[in-house]
Length: 243
Image (cartoon, rainbow, N blue to C red; front, side, top):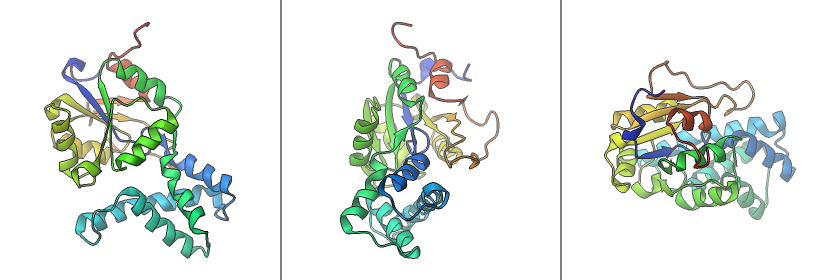
């Protein structure tokens, strides 16, 4: 059981990339589907390199080196650099289509079932650095049953800036302590906790592919530690109506 009464929690805010959807496997599959000459480790190495550019790109926005740029724009800047480094030239239409793979990421096997259970008891929403259009497209494609979609875009800040977590609680009409951040990334959860949100860590050992490992965290560091979303629903007492 969690270390807090679940009745105190009114809404669950979910990190998306890695926590809800499998970016590594999805990008790897897209490399193969498009037949791109980026096949080291079946496209997995390229997926890791693309994702590795994510935090530095957001820092460029945070520092003012770039004006506010949504994730499509940041992903495309990273993609163009990686392709140039590898001597790969794509037609504009193909590059644009490849960049939109982030709109089509596939959910983890437990994501839809777990979210459906959690939705019976809590308001469930994204709280992602992905922009609204991306998150909506992803939800439609993957069948993710969100009650609403919250994005860093709404606050003009990227996580882990506190404006994102506090802004989410404000838009939901809740106190931070009534909101639980759910993520597989300890840094995201620590930033949320510093803003007064409750926290749930969900293990995603394959986020970076086989053998990629997970970021380190300490047992007891977060309010809840779950194996997956179905386990999280069980720990928070969220079941389907017919169960």
